[in-house]
Each structure stands twice: as C-alpha cells, then as structure tokens.
Image 1 (tube, rainbow, N blue to C red):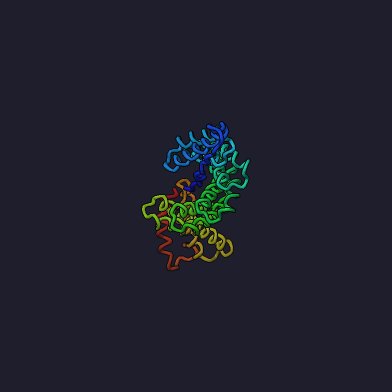
Image 2: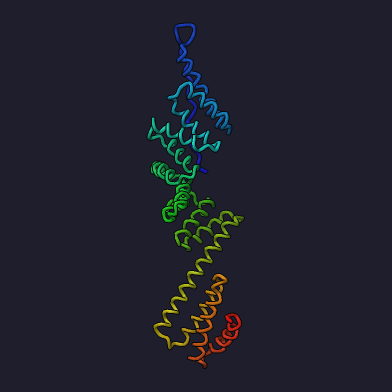
Length: 299
C-alpha cells in the first residue's frame, strides 16, 4: 500500500521578550507548534485519533500552519474519513499548488470515495513527479481497470512490475488488466509469475486456469472457422469434413450446455458427409464410431 509522507517535526522557537510574560500571539504560535509536533509523534506511533486532535488544535491556534493541514489529511485517511481528508488536502493545495504529497493524498482520498475519474486527475499529475514509484503505478492501473480502460491499466502495471519485479500483487493485477484487454498470452505469463512468487496464491492459479480456458476457446473457434471456410471453398475434399466434425465436438465440449446439442448435430452432419465421400479412407472407421456415438446425443 502506498504511504503518504508525514510532514516532519518543526522546531519550537522560544521567543524572548523584554516583559515578564510573552504576548498572547507568540504564546499561540508556540503552542501550535507544540501541538503539531505532538500530532506527528502520534502518527509515528500509529495513533491517528490522537494525531487528529493535536493537528486540529494546532490549526485552531495557527490556521496558516500548512504542514498541520497536510498531516490532518493523513490522519483522516487513516481513520477512513476520505471526505474530510480530501477537504484537508485541497486546502493545502490552495496555498501550495505544487505540494506533491498533498496532491497524492487528495488522489487517494478521491479513490477511497469511489471517484476514480477525480483520483486519476490528481494521481496522473503526481506520477510525473514520482515515475519510479511502483505502488503509484499499481494504483493508477487499478483505477484505469475500474474505468474500463484495460490498455492504459496494463501500461501502468507493466511499469509497476518493472520497478518491483518480485511483487506478486502487481503481477496479479497485471494479469487481470491483460485479460481485460484480450491479451491472454501476457495475462497467463503474469499469473504464472504471481504464482511463482507466491506459490500459495489460489487466486493466481484460478485466474491462470480461466485465461487458459479462454485461450483454448479462441483457438477452437478459430479452428472451426478455418475448416468451415475451407469446406465452403472446397466441399469435395472429404478430410475437411472429418476435421470440421472433430472441431465441432471440441467446441461442444467447452460450450454452454444449451449449445452442445446443436454443435454435436453439426459434427454428426460433417462425419456423415465424410463417410459418404470417402468410405475407404483410413479415417472411415473413426468417423463411423463418432456417428454411432453422436446419434443418441442429438435425438
């Protein structure tokens, strides 16, 4: 998971005044910095609720403390409050439009609110500044997948895989994006790699099987189409009918139940055509066997 960088601890400036007491404004500035640093410490010990309280107190005392506003957004994200987090990051960007971490936070907040288009606008600007961050490319890939843009998703996920070649999760997401775009060969390669890195990943093996099945279906469809066209162009060539019959059986084996009978009927017709055209062919006994097996199934 991508992590936002917390703005660091600030020095608390101890202002010395001629009078016995510090002016109220100076006291507020000093307390704001103390509150801010307490919030940073709370984030470091994974206590976002305490951090949230301290950053809000710091901003109450000094509304112009941009670092507190940024870290407030981080605390809100960690507490699963992406709406208020987005508001906090947006306020930072109003003051510092080139603040990359605030823009990253805003993109992540939009993502958490299921606003992929808005998240992409922000994160696409961040990736130009962080081109070597594999987790950022991973998030962009996931967002493009959600928006049904698998080719763009795959491009970012390939960058992520190049930058983090041993990350099984990235390989898995790359496999999904490649499958979405119809690139089954690349999808199978990615799922195999995910399974190599994480041998107990059942999802990687399952999706590898799904994609392999899709590839087989595509090859069978291509085979049926090729033999059908050959039969149209040269109907007198007996062995074309035999091979087309076999192809129809293969297609029936991987098709929906409601389609099987029609496909087996087509296979039966092709074997009969072959048998009529070439009764002495060495494949004739196999054709006769197939006819005998198919006839009861298509009645």
